[in-house]
Amino acid sequence: MSRTSSSRRSLAPYLYVLPAFVVFAVFLGWPFLQTLQYSFYDWDGLSVATWAGVQNYADVVSDPVLRSAFGHALVLMLFYSAVPIVVALVLTGVISRASALRGMSVYRTLLFLPQVIASVVVATIWVSIYSQGGLLNQALRLVGLDSVARVWLGDYALALPAIGFVGTWLNIGLCLVLFLSGVSTIHPSLFEAARLDGAGAVREFVSVTLPLLRGQVAVALTLTVVSALKTFDLVYVTTGGGPGTSTVVPAFEAYNRAFNTGKVGSAAAVAITLTLVILLVTVLINRLSPRETS
Amino acid sequence: MRMSLRERVVDHTILTLFALFAVIPLVGVVVSAVTPSAANDGGFHLPTTIDLGNFGLAWTDGHFGSYMLSSLLVTVGVVVLTTVLAVLAGFAFARLEFAGSTVLFFVLLAGLMLPSEAFIIPLYFNLRSAGLLDTYAALILPQTAQSLAFGIFWMRNTFRVFPQEVIEAARLDGARDLRLLWGVVVPPSLPSVATMAVLVSMWTWNEFLMPLVLITSEDHRTAPLGLAFFKGQHLTDYSLLSAGGIIVALPIVVLYVLLQKRFISGMLGGFADR
Image (cartoon, rainbow over the protein chains, first blue to last red):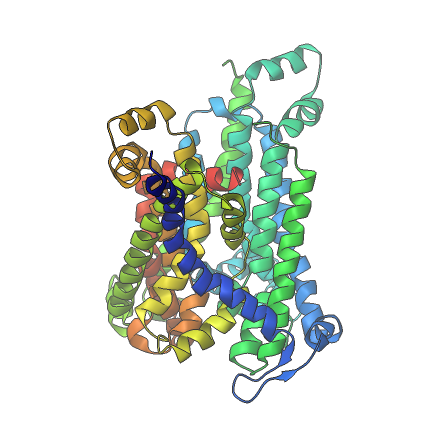
């Protein structure tokens, strides 16, 4: 083979990657680095930016609104991640050998359905469920709990949990489908063996099902925690951060500061902090999950 | 497998209960959308009269004709661009050797982790100074950039398991890289390409933050953005809001029902392998 053709061969792979890389770099990579840069400046988006050092980051810790925004994200994690995973694990334990069930694919389709609906649509659905005459209050009145009924999204203490519960609704199906598909790959003989050894339902779950589901639990944890941290659309459409600042979350506050209140530098610092948190959480979960032997 | 009757009954009951939990709010929307506005307080009532007029009213009043068209254009643009670019790059990462490929791949993969907030602020200012704000390009290009991380990852996985013998046979027949890719490797991989296209369509159709920030006039609004503005105008008209929501969600839900196996395994598989 001549020298020219061999050098062409070695350049060719870059030509395959180049178009994708250019689009990625121009519209995502470079703007990300700019966000990093903005985060060290005091800028309103119009006038000249002034160097702010780490002040914007210091605000993330000291500004009560920003601090509470990250606190709210923690509350959402509980609803988006912890509750669905625990509920789905318990259900999976009960339905331990569900792969043999007839009609499984119908259940899967229905359970997963909320995942494919645009979050803006999900938000409008729940705005109506939480309204004065909505489904939730209707159900409460039906069982005689009239005193509990309220405008859920207008309540300082309950608006955030109400938004969180939408995450629970969204993610239970996701986790359940994920765990059931994991269980279906466990060989039935393992369950039989456990039973022959005299293991009860709980013992069987703890020593057979749970260990073999660790990979799926790690995936569910990653997906749900990240989606809790990324929550934006739901808050924007349902409460706009209110009442007061009781449902402000980091992604919402980054948007709000950049495009409504003209605090671009601060918004960038919030966005970078959020990115770091997401990265950290993902790495941590991956550390804890079992190494795939492939 | 032998399962006791009791076990089967318990399993079905639990699954039915949770399937209902997932579906009741959605059924509620459908009922709400056909209930006359005056009789709708957001609760669940079996309507005495079915009013399909809400859909017509929402469609015209909410300008959903124009919004759906925008969404369609943007989605098709993003899917075509992502597919072509991801197939090319995925092939290179899976089958061609070049210096720095691992580093490049992980840089691109990092895009999966990045929340939109981490790049949308400068993107707004950049697109504004380039005169691209409020154009379809302002939605298609960044959305493609965001989809590429998943697309490249997905195509690389697909091409990595492609049988080596077939590629070698084609090379012996004198096929060069590009012809080898589009003529030999891609056709049998079409189901996998389709799964990626379906997922990217869903993400693009459902995206909210990018159109919210990058679109300023009504002409280029996408359907989810249109719904948010529609909600602003009709705060408590739950019939119209439900009808609007159904209009926005329907294309993806229909696609999902037709291809649910591909959707579920694609989403779970794609992430599970990550």
